[in-house]
Image (cartoon, rainbow, N blue to C red; front, side, top):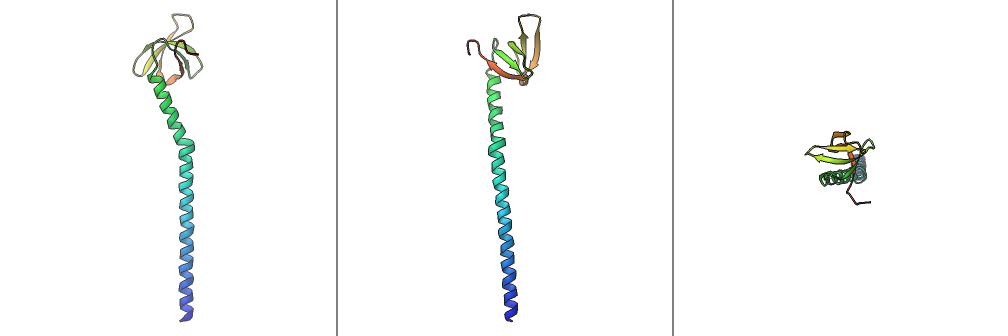
Length: 110
Protein backbone atom coordinates (compact mmCIF):
# COMPACT_ATOMS: atom_id res chain seq x y z
CA UNK A 1 0.00 0.00 0.00
CA UNK A 2 2.79 2.35 0.85
CA UNK A 3 4.43 1.53 -2.44
CA UNK A 4 1.27 2.50 -4.39
CA UNK A 5 1.13 5.92 -2.77
CA UNK A 6 4.69 6.71 -3.66
CA UNK A 7 4.06 5.68 -7.31
CA UNK A 8 0.98 7.94 -7.43
CA UNK A 9 2.93 10.84 -5.98
CA UNK A 10 5.70 10.29 -8.53
CA UNK A 11 3.18 10.28 -11.38
CA UNK A 12 1.62 13.50 -10.11
CA UNK A 13 5.05 15.15 -9.85
CA UNK A 14 5.95 14.10 -13.41
CA UNK A 15 2.68 15.48 -14.76
CA UNK A 16 3.29 18.76 -12.94
CA UNK A 17 6.78 18.98 -14.44
CA UNK A 18 5.47 18.41 -17.96
CA UNK A 19 2.81 21.08 -17.45
CA UNK A 20 5.46 23.56 -16.32
CA UNK A 21 7.54 22.80 -19.40
CA UNK A 22 4.51 23.35 -21.62
CA UNK A 23 3.79 26.67 -19.89
CA UNK A 24 7.39 27.76 -20.42
CA UNK A 25 7.21 26.84 -24.12
CA UNK A 26 3.98 28.85 -24.53
CA UNK A 27 5.63 31.84 -22.84
CA UNK A 28 8.56 31.61 -25.29
CA UNK A 29 6.17 31.57 -28.25
CA UNK A 30 4.31 34.62 -26.90
CA UNK A 31 7.57 36.51 -26.30
CA UNK A 32 8.86 35.71 -29.80
CA UNK A 33 5.51 36.78 -31.31
CA UNK A 34 5.60 40.08 -29.41
CA UNK A 35 9.19 40.71 -30.51
CA UNK A 36 8.25 40.03 -34.15
CA UNK A 37 5.39 42.51 -33.85
CA UNK A 38 7.49 45.30 -32.33
CA UNK A 39 10.57 44.81 -34.52
CA UNK A 40 9.04 43.91 -37.89
CA UNK A 41 5.32 44.46 -38.30
CA UNK A 42 4.83 47.75 -36.43
CA UNK A 43 7.62 49.71 -38.20
CA UNK A 44 6.43 48.46 -41.57
CA UNK A 45 2.89 49.68 -40.89
CA UNK A 46 4.25 53.07 -39.79
CA UNK A 47 6.21 53.36 -43.04
CA UNK A 48 3.14 52.44 -45.09
CA UNK A 49 1.09 55.14 -43.33
CA UNK A 50 3.85 57.70 -43.93
CA UNK A 51 4.05 56.86 -47.64
CA UNK A 52 0.25 56.99 -47.98
CA UNK A 53 0.19 60.46 -46.38
CA UNK A 54 3.07 61.59 -48.61
CA UNK A 55 1.32 60.44 -51.79
CA UNK A 56 -2.05 61.88 -50.79
CA UNK A 57 -0.46 65.29 -50.12
CA UNK A 58 1.26 65.31 -53.53
CA UNK A 59 0.23 68.23 -55.77
CA UNK A 60 0.86 69.44 -59.30
CA UNK A 61 4.28 71.11 -59.50
CA UNK A 62 5.93 68.97 -56.82
CA UNK A 63 9.32 67.46 -57.58
CA UNK A 64 9.35 63.68 -57.21
CA UNK A 65 11.90 60.88 -57.25
CA UNK A 66 10.69 57.57 -58.64
CA UNK A 67 11.61 54.19 -57.22
CA UNK A 68 13.99 53.74 -60.17
CA UNK A 69 15.82 56.99 -59.30
CA UNK A 70 14.47 59.41 -61.92
CA UNK A 71 13.77 63.02 -60.91
CA UNK A 72 10.72 64.73 -62.38
CA UNK A 73 7.92 67.25 -61.88
CA UNK A 74 4.29 66.24 -61.43
CA UNK A 75 2.13 67.59 -64.28
CA UNK A 76 -1.23 65.88 -63.61
CA UNK A 77 -2.68 63.68 -60.85
CA UNK A 78 -5.56 61.21 -60.82
CA UNK A 79 -6.63 58.80 -58.07
CA UNK A 80 -4.18 56.02 -58.90
CA UNK A 81 -1.86 57.54 -61.50
CA UNK A 82 0.10 60.71 -62.16
CA UNK A 83 1.91 62.19 -65.15
CA UNK A 84 5.51 63.15 -64.49
CA UNK A 85 7.69 65.33 -66.73
CA UNK A 86 11.36 64.35 -66.75
CA UNK A 87 14.12 66.81 -67.61
CA UNK A 88 13.59 70.08 -69.46
CA UNK A 89 12.17 68.32 -72.52
CA UNK A 90 8.42 68.94 -72.69
CA UNK A 91 7.98 65.75 -74.76
CA UNK A 92 9.20 63.49 -71.95
CA UNK A 93 5.97 63.12 -69.97
CA UNK A 94 5.33 59.66 -68.61
CA UNK A 95 2.19 58.40 -66.88
CA UNK A 96 2.97 56.22 -63.87
CA UNK A 97 1.40 54.76 -60.77
CA UNK A 98 1.61 56.75 -57.56
CA UNK A 99 3.14 53.67 -55.91
CA UNK A 100 6.23 54.13 -58.15
CA UNK A 101 7.07 57.42 -56.38
CA UNK A 102 9.60 57.15 -53.57
CA UNK A 103 10.02 60.80 -52.45
CA UNK A 104 8.12 64.06 -52.87
CA UNK A 105 9.60 67.55 -52.49
CA UNK A 106 7.44 70.64 -52.36
CA UNK A 107 8.64 73.71 -54.33
CA UNK A 108 10.81 75.93 -52.15
CA UNK A 109 11.56 73.12 -49.71
CA UNK A 110 15.20 72.11 -49.25
